[in-house]
Structure formats: structure tokens, C-alpha cells
Image (cartoon, rainbow, N blue to C red; front, side, top):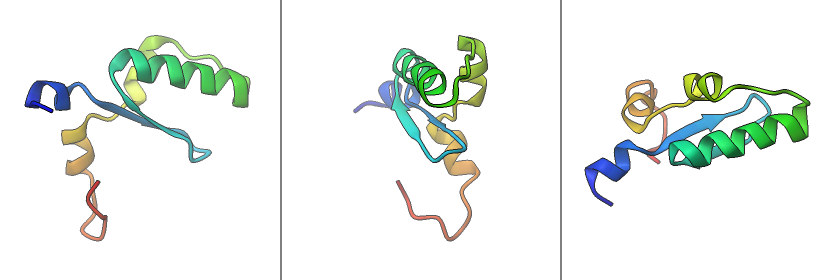
Length: 69
């Protein structure tokens, strides 16, 4: 995978423990479906993207004891 593809990967983690990783469109679709199906919640694309973490941001917030992903 090249740097451009890596930068496009997003992660969203729900408070229930569910997690999704993928492209912006994949993450938005999966998160929207998860919220509606399991939590009876709806979110806009903008709300979902605001919750999403990009790989560089995830590494920056990792604590020293975190295992690399």
C-alpha cells in the first residue's frame, strides 16, 4: 500500500466496542448502518467523519504501552 492509500484509511470506534476501518465511504456507510441497527441512532456523514481517526492521529494519541497495529 502506498502512502496515499494509507492516509485515506479511517477508523471509527463505537462506545460499545464495535470498530470499522476503511475508506471514507466504507467507514461512513458501516458506521451509519451500525448506529441505526444496534443503537437506533442516526448520524450525518459530517458527524461520522468528525469521530473518525486517521492513522497519523491514532499513532500520536497512543500511549507507551499500546501495541502497534
